Length: 248
Image 1 (tube, helix red, strand yellow):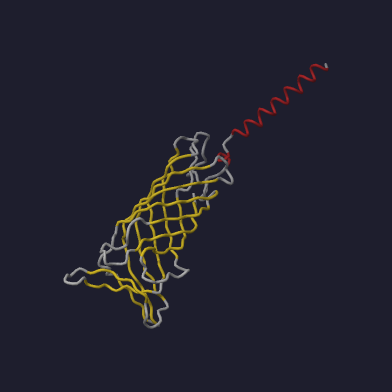
Image 2 (spheres, helix red, strand yellow):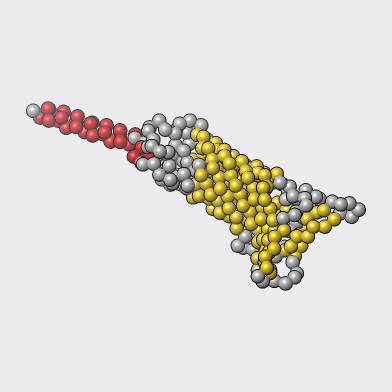
């Protein structure tokens, strides 16, 4: 009877351990209902064969500026822009912690500064160029230059295995086409917009980086191209740095 009791105790322990292991082996996302945040799984809950996908809809909020030759024009600290990206997250395998992502994006750069643009003619030609210089007239209480892009972003994606506190490292690259641009200012109650930049470069591209935990990232972008095509224009490139949110 003693041996039988010991045997029953051992078998009971083994069954308990086996059940615990099965519970641990169950993918944590299976217990979650579909939602709209980072664990969104569609209209139905995932199964154990479903690939883990993240950060398919992202929004970035950033400080934006231009570098190069601003001709002593200063950018305001509240010069802010934003991005929206819809991405296809493609793991290298169903449970891979590495993958790629490609998608469609929209970027809005809004640079607030204390300068003004003048459009000047080259000597002896009809060609015009864009000249940025400090503004010295009556007070402008709104003074900003806007560039809007439609883009194709691409990322390499590296993620840790943890469900919570998941580390993410996403180096990438994006190329875009400038669909709108203007400079806007307001003097007293009068508002003005200038759309007629003569020598815009509408094709832009450059590296991006997002690094963070779960669905919050630090974000950065460096534009490798110049804003204007005429060599007499100010040679300016866009940069941005801020926070990114991966909604699902």
